[in-house]
Image (cartoon, rainbow, N blue to C red; front, side, top):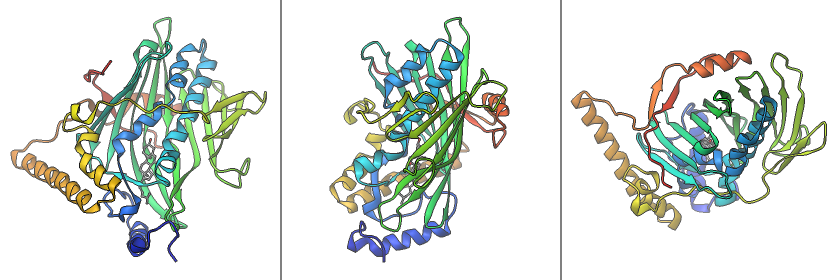
Length: 377
Ligand code: HCR
């Protein structure tokens, strides 16, 4: 019997959706899902999760040597996971299916300078519609910290769960006082979406992700759910090893949605039990027509109000307009031009740093920010 969280009238369409997930592998974005599982939030909004604790991000600049900088970057990375992977459960009751962004959709905002932490700016662009690929750039220029990345997903179905392999990576660059730079290659964890049968999906992270510093320090982060390490959901263990060895000098352990500590010293490491800070975005009326919240506003309102007829009519309008645009481009022999990012086939930073820990794959493409968005202040 399909789960309790599914409204009676949607049980059969939920069962059909689950069957279609099991047979379609690769990209779930275009599958039609029953209304109760839809969110009115576009995937272009997700990169904001990298910075919902702006002071943890900006404090990377306070580290005074390579070792403590790698610790600060690891601490910030772990502190982003709660926002990235549990936000929808907290806000909407369970994981939901986000809106599938259109090509060229933009999401931009900032976190203001409070207490000397510097302003952090965000610009996101949907750089591919099929498959969906989202590029993002987050910077705190006054602290000399810059994050650039892109991400896409490959999905499969196994043992009643959706397995999501994240494709893409991020590179964090930190300006040093001597004029030099330190770079960190960040790989993305694999996720499993459980609880599908009950109609209340949630994420668990699995396997391993890495943060490789250009100085040689490497964080190896292992993720486990219930029944491993501490036996708790959302557990992780991160080992930080100095250049040239895989012998860990620091080990941190705990849950990424609560707290963690240094295994050797017992000192507190991350704590995300306090409030987070959502990105500040212009009012919808002030946004331009390509900005996510403006573009999707009537669809989002329909979903919020339970008026799915309006939501689906408005969604079709957007999709038809996109289809027409692609036809016109094909007829004119032109292609869509990205606004804020340039695509490169292979990322030299990924290749250089990836070699140090034998990244798989050994090479990846990337989207390089053009520094042409004027952030609000
Ligand atoms: C897999 C997912 C879309 C992608 C979302 C990503 C991986 C996007 C990048 C963010 O940095 C982190 C992130 C978090 C989300 O957990 C993940 C989404 C979870 C569900 C969604 C599927 C496409 C929707 C599947 C439909 C289910 C809920 C029935």
